[in-house]
Length: 494
Image (cartoon, rainbow, N blue to C red; front, side, top):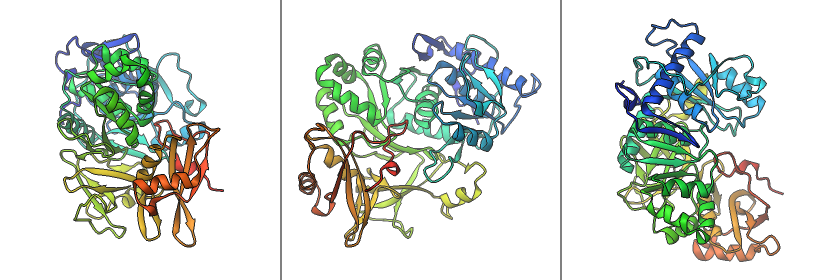
């Protein structure tokens, strides 16, 4: 297939591609730095300099700190025709040891001076020198060749490595370019981690494929968002935790409101953005945040389009090339979309991963016989095709009193109560109802928390009586992962 990064081929220009803090690289710089690094990667693997595509199918680990070196490393690995295995620097030794043993990388790339944990001690190390320059090799990779091996969170066992082919990266980024009218004139700002699909594929590879620029904040902060958007950035990517902080800061920060109002596109992903945060941001800036839906295994599936209706609480419509359907528990497709009937999302298209590395059993279980991927996400779909996620099948679908209830809509209702700062909803066994609805609440004022009846009545008025919580637990904070998702399996009853 053609290069993933056309702007690096031929005679790259002097437009800035990557900007991390005070350091930046133009496209010419990035092509030279990546070219030099591919040569050093091949030398470390014992390849001859003239070999056009050494190590096809080989894997290279990348110590994925939020730094310029990580971006250069991943681009170089892809340009070398190999697969990058991004490593979360916050992972524990046991998890890192599992990932290294499972993926079998030939070496690890890291920024000079980065101290690597002992779990990586057996790998040859190549330091990324962003100031060195060399020629890029000819890209002779095929569309089905692996580009990335990204490890999932492993809620039901050790993390699984999703093998993402080059065609999936290209298909997703080109589909988003269509949906978001994303061009080389766009400048993206974000502060997302670079070991995950959101920050790495969308947030770094996306701008480079378009020929645009990314300004990485290093560490997220509303001051950085204000500075970069007021300084010419056109797009902001974030997770709900980030947008929640933005919503809280807006009333006292007119410069932040001005910055957001001037952005072309505000995008939230990785988890559902609560409706009340949508509304607070829209009221203060006149701009609507749009949401999209994807997974490690599928990259991006749906999005609200830049030229579509930014409907709060939905993830929009399927992206070009993506087939999406909802199915009943027995696998029967739901054909009448009424905005109420809950089903599991299944998807099919060029955006999908090829396998779980070394796990043929898990790979087979993830797909139907006719090639649909079982996402495990539950949703409803409006007659015009808009999709609204109601939660995960394993943790967010509550069967109570004969009803199928999605935790997400109850969480949104709870967050509209002024005494609630954060909320999560789960189900627990109930002899009468099958499952009863349980709310986990972080109160706005710990000295004056809301009561069970008060919250139950609040939800029943907004949704329906059968969706009211029967039990309320008060917490100081909700457990979240690196992407801001609430880890519901860490919530225990009793």
